[in-house]
Image 1: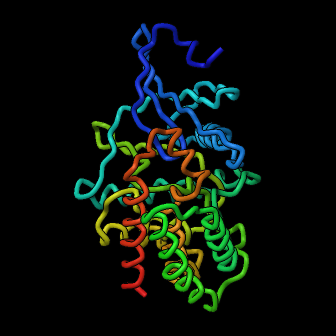
Image 2 (image 1 turned 120 degrees about the horizontal axis):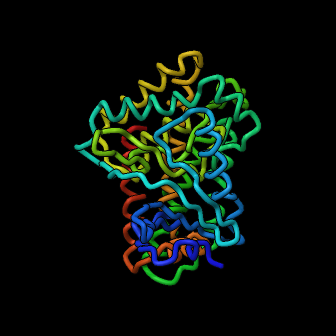
Image 3 (image 1 turned 180 degrees about the vertical axis):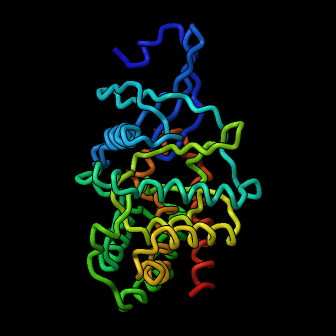
Amino acid sequence: MNFLDKFPNASIKEITAGRNSRVFSVTTSGGEKYCAKEYFQSDTDQRPRMQIETDSLAMLAACGVTDIPRVLDIDTENQITIFSFIEGEKIDGEKITEANVIALANFLLSLQQQAIREHFGNFVDAADASFSREAIFDDIQSRFDRFKQIEVKDDITRDAVVFLNDTLNPFLQEQKGKVGYEQLPREYQILSPSDFGFHNILIDQTGGQHYIDFEYFGWDAPEKCINDFLLHPGFTLEKKKRLLFKKEMLCGLAHDSQLAQRVDDTYQLFGIKWCLILLNEFCPACWQRRVFVGAATSETLTHQLAKAKRLFGELRETN
């Protein structure tokens, strides 16, 4: 039986199609409202995203963390989870205040309390967690290798291949010879949703912030988290406010005296990585995910390549 069959006569409405999942509001005949999330399944997608999300949210709730969805039920066979429904809206751009940014940083810093860290002692690493400069470079190189599958069949795929080989890759090789750092000890690692930013926050009517999307949660490097926020193309936010997040995180993690240097040393690398993430749709496996969530259109490839080129231009300016 399909999991949603447990809600006979319910009104089910798709409210968002993410890049790897579909999210629905479920309103029962009795007026109760829930959130249902269906996860993409593929032989090439090895990360158990549903299990990680449900486990992390349940464990955080057990630690007293609020402002996150509650896990109500799980359908492993169909890869569907039912969560509590959060009444709120996403905000972007000029509507994001400095107070919003500080609250976001404080939420992330609150996850680093010793009791929570001990509770998650043996939890998995966050998605794409890299705990040395060499590991970051290796992760990016493996992403480059995926693009060898691109079949040049039209102008847009040809343009993408030229951009990858003649622009991005030489810039990556420039970074290879720079001084690195050794494996980051656990005491300096942080617990993070990984894909963290205003694209995964809901603001309720009182102004309260609620944090969603924990599919990639786990132990992570703080320099990755900070640089991802500085670079993330998934939400619009002026540079001054992005840098405020960096400042708040560096202050909150002041015991890590080398963090500021690691953030600056890896900024270019993470920028290259984000360029590659924006080009994921050119990889066949990733394209199937976009088909699953209904986000694959004829303009998708052109749009993503333009965003990658724009981000690279900004990287060059800061280089």
